[in-house]
Image (cartoon, rainbow, N blue to C red; front, side):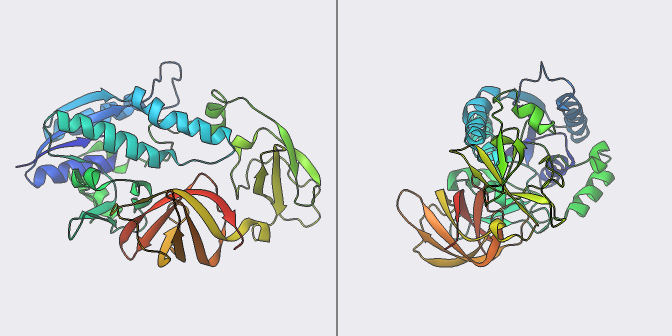
Length: 360
């Protein structure tokens, strides 16, 4: 019998994961992770409600639940990087770093110190161990979360269980309902990892100073003023505040780029404007699930955002974990700071951080 400690968030996914582990005969305990000081931010993050749900789930399953704070680790390993990236005008993926540094490092270390053989989470992904440990897409393609797990190591994966990997989300909710879990119809969280569903711009300005500047078209025409480049991402349509000004086409405006030197936001009209599309990108911090850098160039598929359909591409790697990705088709809104993640069929191969979009 294996001892498994599961991260119990108070949501339906981790609840059913815990249920399945019990049914499989594991000795199961649970941890509710608290990783943010909310004393001065009441009303934004429903941590108290989530903890109450986690306690009820643990009671129904007759498993021990403890609360552990990783707030210092979160601040130092995740949030500082998050702020640095936004200050540099980039758009980071904090959930990816959070998985690597908190759920599968700080939590894993805590669980192993407590005598666990494995940790478990409610991620929609699969792990197989032949011939090496491989990370596979979840069976439910709409919920597959390998994009957020692509930085995990062989050691981290060898100690992890994903009980929901073979299930569709509808089946998970059915199992939760049959088990009598009150969270069976609880809405999925869409907020920043461990921070919650806050008003993002209001939250960000608590830590970073606004730096307004001009909004221009590619030909240099000034069409408005932005509140700070950190508030915008490539491809964004809503919230630009320029409406129909300087509008001769009737098309909406989209963010096409950022000029950091001049603190200028570049916008274009129309969602199919050529400035929104690139065929190539350069990536850094490449990580491979196998921990072996593949011989390149090689062909595979890739995503530049979660839930995007995989795209055919060719990957060429260079020194210092850098590489270039050439897509067969033009890609819309390639965003520096986000991640590009590689696949071969069901296998998640790894990925890296997008540094810049390229024409060729």
